[in-house]
Image (cartoon, rainbow, N blue to C red; front, side):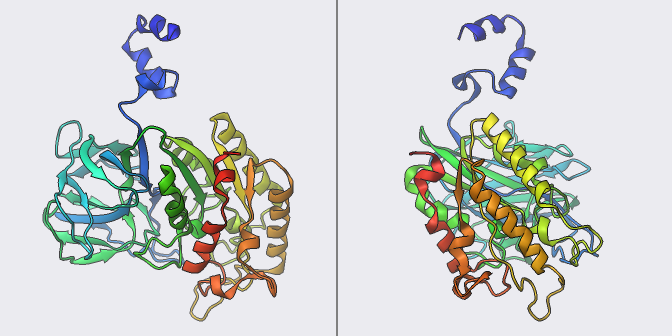
Length: 422
């Protein structure tokens, strides 16, 4: 407190700078216990010649987009965060609403709450920036689904997304942000411009971040059912006042960009910058191993285990410097991955690539450098063929987990170990 009193005389600018860097006491730096109830890591769009089609409109104009999310913790006030991180021009929002989601796609249940931004119902998000709404009074229960509706009054290029949304979002003509239901002109399964929903939670609420690639992002789980492994983990932690934030990006890599920024580049944004983060689970590296020489990166040389491990060590160091517990998860089996009929991807798996996975897993298990280890490989591998996922847990593509596999992984997590409570 003495330090704060002395600094107050040095001017508002310095006080604000210290606030932003975390040097002011928490009571001075916050207007409530704001915890992300839900997040989606922003990604840029990509060109049409990439092996995976984007499947999104190039732009929106005079249209409403309604997206449904599930809040991990409950609270008495809500605000949203929009991201124009990959936009090259300002993003104009004509209106925004949040409401309890209904059971029918595109519907809401109960009152719809108009959001404001600095007291205004319309907002402009600068290129490259996020924008947080004002708080609104709204009771939210743990694991409640919320519908967030955004109206785009003018031509708006779709630039900042989360591709693997796995939750149908409705697009309809006109400003329908407050409508009880939307009859969609089109439906997408990606997140567009929406990156977080924050909840003013009870004292002591905190969050765990699942930081990974498509396995964490839930690829091949059943859309619209919240069947990713972080979703099942959220069911276990909701009663402890802990939110589980999914910071998976399909195609994500530790060391290189493509379907989003590399792990080292986005760690501050997606993990350390999240309010109330207590622990992070790191499950990433399979694309670093498998993309080189495959359809994704046919001319890229093989990744070295030492390079991936060096990346892990950087993440460990950065997490600990911020007082965040970091838990390493072993990389799951992938023999035969993406070889099903009609797959556009070739050469994703090879015995040499699996040997690299085994070497990295041995380091994760035996180095002692993580605060704890979750052996997801041991949970999902087939005892009869440990190089493959157990058929009951396999989505069918031999890389991603099905719903049962995601649930098994989540159920295997020792919660006290995860949270450092023993």
